[in-house]
Length: 503
Image (cartoon, rainbow, N blue to C red; front, top):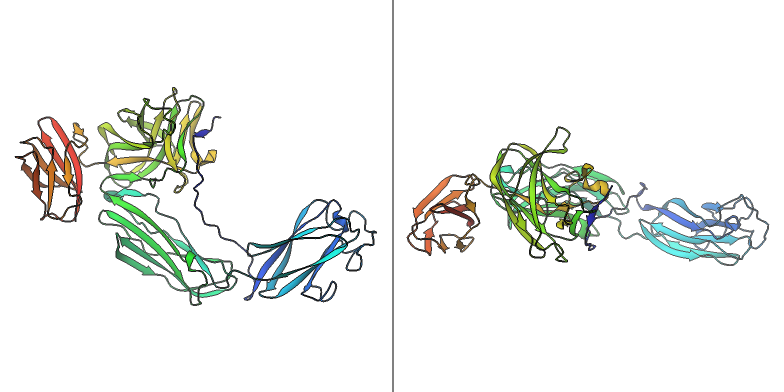
């Protein structure tokens, strides 16, 4: 099989890693030691004692060739193979739960004295060492220090879309978890969830308190919140505990997305991978899944073409919409957009479906079509992706999830839904609106005198209409409610639309 092909790559991955460790009593943490032997592993012995005690005094644990060496076997040269550690190996020894702030000695003994073992101590993911053994023996000291005793972190996921039409908006709050990543148990942990529209707090909820043992996770649920108007929303999760949290940087998790009047987008506008296409001069499709919860009119699709090397300038491309079968796999081609000619670098293109397509509630794949005559360069983002939503297919390759090929990405393809898409002669705006957003009035420029102007609310309702008597016209909108509106200008058979926001 030919894998999907990545043209250019820049490392801009963002992830959070949480160290896991076994549960220890308060004031203690798990400690491990990685022991790397030389070519004669059986010559190695060591024990763990309190600091300064000396080998064999108050021994807590013993390792290696205990039977033939021990603390008195340094330089005896009588150990034989088949005992203790293997040669040229690394063994992880678990020292169990040790008391925080106490210090300990690794007392290393070598039976021959011509090599040695190397010791690396790990405490809560932080290494001490390496301590390199040499001669007939050494004493290595370490103290059980931890970055934090009381520390919790929030873990959740962003909303699966970065933009969504208001008519399709649903609950935007995901369940979240609080992880105790410090060395101590924490009490009274709770999770607050806040939703901001622009900078205004519009929703807040705080969970019941829980106690969380060190190294464990507690899950929290919050009542849902569904936006009821367009705008930019931020969801902020904040964890708090009764103890003083020693690291506030990981107490908060947040994401931002936009409720629009028409756009479905999974990408966040960050093209950190470059162009992606199907290799081997093959034709095929690559696309994202979108879910509708009610009927919509699909009017156009938007695509970001990378074209970083200008290798595909002058080539044309199309975007297609597929329905899914009962297994959730893309199946039936429902329609294809007009063609667009690639010209610039990192450029968005809007391609119309003519006629527009009515889609009932369900899941659909919006995909870019690759011609066998060239290799596509659709922009992609790794900074946000939802598993099971990006699909690819080509000659002799059935529809397959992108992560099957180790690509966890979101393609920069957007579905545009428009209540006015039934206008078959809909064209890109030939006039301008300013200011935008506006409060009391808008000015329309580059208008044909005698054109009909109609203003539609996001619901599709006609709210204002008049005949324009000037090529530059001021239109009062002070009686309109705040929100997104579409201005439709009709002059003979020519129709043009543009949007504005009423504050």
